[in-house]
Image 1 (cartoon, each protein chain N blue to C red):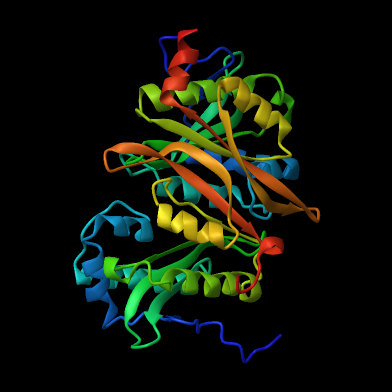
Image 2 (tube, rainbow over the protein chains, first blue to last red):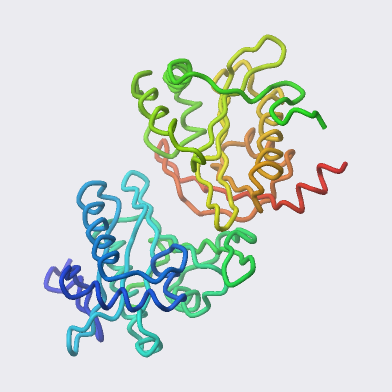
Amino acid sequence: MDITNSLYEGRLIRLGPIDHEKDPPLVARWTHDALFRTVLGAVARPLSSDAVRRQLEKVEKQMEEAKNLIHFTIRARVDNRLVGLARIFWIDFHTGTGVLNMGIGDASDRRHGYGSDALNLLLRFAFDELNLHRLSAWPSADNLPFIQMVNKAGFEEEARRREASFHDGCYWDVLHLGLLRSQWKQGS
Amino acid sequence: MSANLFEGQLVRLSSETSQVMGEAFARWNQNSEYFRLLDSDPAHLWSANKFKEFLEKDLDSALPANLLFSIRTLENDKLIGFVAFDGINWTDRDGYVAIGIGEPDFWGKGFGTDAMRLMLRYGFTELNLHRVSLNVYAYNLRGIHSYEKCGFKHEGRIREFILRDGLRSDMLHMGILREEWDKLAQK
């Protein structure tokens, strides 16, 4: 155990709390890109900053009350700028399971390694702090950047729910990827 | 195929007052084997009143995400279980189905399979679902066999998902598409 090794500081990004004043306008702008639905996990829909503020308040309330959700903002270390959101949800401490989702909001911030850096921190958080036994992710089959990123970290395809998501005018398979604690390689 | 959507060969799908259904759930859950086949939560015993409260929350919504039916035998109208769509995504037209036969005397005799077939017909022809999904624990062999008979296909295995008696078990994903069900229904 090394408690001086920060759970939140990566090479490029840090995981942080929500800033209820500054974050909503930026997240609202992200929702005007339909791709962002993969991050919020809902139907694509442009939201006002008021609507986002309320959603983020609800998220924090759920973290406090249900205790089955961990939500982080992803911030660039260089200037502390908000670049994405991440969460571990459907946490069941009694079986040691949870589901991971994350995304980088602005297209110009993608493919810079922010996501992989955040993923390493999230896996360490899930296994070393939450003590989960396994972690799942449920991307739609067309979300290739996300799938490639989590595959690199050791996630394997465990199930393929055929034609379980409808978007962009057609049905897509939804993958159920899983990473067992025993297969997780720290810092890989 | 019977003209009545809610009537099968052995059972019918029915509805109960929240009092009757609440008492039934409270009674069935006292059989821990039943509960551990059904749910991954730690087994627990709620009162009939608590179940009644849960059921009443959903009474006022016109098109609920949760559609619960009781299962009654055709022969003597005995209440033996429930079947429910307990999570419908209307955008994806994907419905998760859950079923429990609470009366062990009716296990392994085709009552659950008959009820599930009714639920599939209801889901596809009335709710216009594109697919019906379910999860089942790998140790629930009777359940898996029944779902296969209804036409569900295996879609994968979530490794070491559940922990009981100190042992990890997998959870299976199964699913059936509308077009697959159509082919079965024509036979």
